[in-house]
Structure formats: structure tokens, C-alpha cells
Image (cartoon, rainbow, N blue to C red; front, side, top):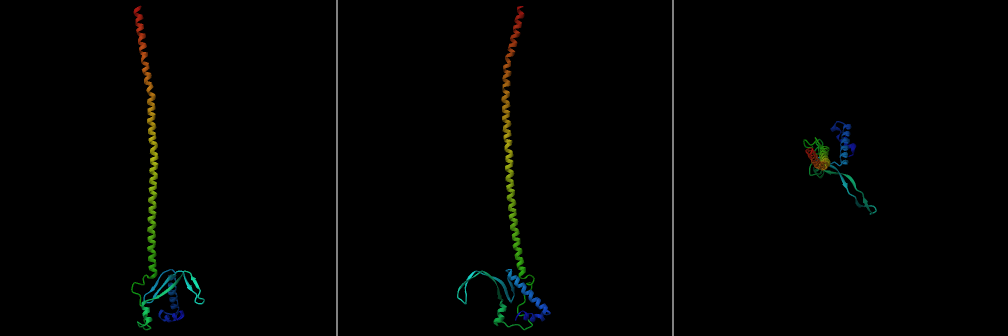
Amino acid sequence: MNKAQLVEAIADKVGGRQQAADAVDHVLDAIVRAVVAGERVSVTGFGSFEKVDRPARYARNPQTGERVRVKKTSVPRFRAGQGFKDLVSGSKKLPRGGEVAVKKAPKGSLTGGASATVKKAAAKKTTAKKAATAKKTAAKKTTAKKATAKTTASKTTAKKAPAKSTAAAKSTAAKKTTAKKAPAKKATATKAPAKKSTARKTTAKKTTARKK
């Protein structure tokens, strides 16, 4: 059975040949795109499609027997479901033409599907990345604040240091002023004898007056 025959087989069940052709095309396109993206497409009772990575290896050319190196590649793989295997092996009877051979999907399983699972996983990864980015940003901000605090502390210390030197300079200037003022007292002390000479002159005057 080829694609055209498949379309003819389901045309009466989906409302026409064109609708059947569109349905088959959309189903196959969705499976191919999901497998290429690395997703696993699983159909209950039928099987699953997935992408398999094959590492580089050595193979033998069947015609010449020569050993050939095969590059790393990725291939699609289909694994038949247990229900499909049982029907092919004959352990289970195939339903009549009007019934569906593949088991119907359980209730609630058609709301998401493989793409929904992938979207949820991507959403979780995005949330984890955002949380990690927020932590890194917070750590950087904390480090910047600490660095700023250290810089401010060093500036404050630098500002305080000149104040101490200013106080020391003021005390030194005060000492110098006191030292300069000290000789003034000596000058006052030296002026004391002048009073004595005045007293001598007064005595001399008195003596002269008595002699007269």
C-alpha cells in the first residue's frame, strides 16, 4: 500500500479524498518535524518514532570486502507498539473492517501530546535559566555594593587623616606661639630695675633738698 492507496482507504471515513489526503499529509509532516527536532512521537498501540544518533564506526564493503570508516550520523527509528506486535504475530485477532485496529488514546491524553511535553520541558529550562541569571545578577550587585562600601570607607579614612594632621599642626603652632610669648615675660622682668633707678633718683633729690 502506497500513500495514494492509504488516502483511498480512509477517504470514506474522513469525509472525502481531499480531506483524507490533507489528514495524511499533516500527520506525516508533524511526525517528521518532531523527529528531526529530536522529539519522540509515540502513538499508543501503534508504535513510536524517534531520532537515533549513530557514532562513527568501521564497516566492511560487501562487494570488495574492504574496511570502510563510516561517519557519525543520525537516523530515524520506528519501534512498533505491543498491540501492533500482537496483531502481526497473530496472538490477537484483527478487528473487523469497521473497527479501529489500534487502541484508542486514553481520555485526557489528547490535550497535550509530545509537543506539549517538549514545551513544558522547554518552559522548565527557561525558568531554571532565569533563576540562575537572577542569582548571578544579585551576586554581582552584592559584590559591587561591597566594593563601593570599601571605597567609601577608604575615602572616609583618607579624609580623617588630614584632620589629625591639622590638629597636630594646630598644637605645634600653639606651642610655638607660647614659646614666642615667653620672652615677653623676661622683658617685663628686665624692666623691674628701672623702678629701682627711679627710686634712687628720688632719694638723691631728697638728699639734695636736705643739704640746702
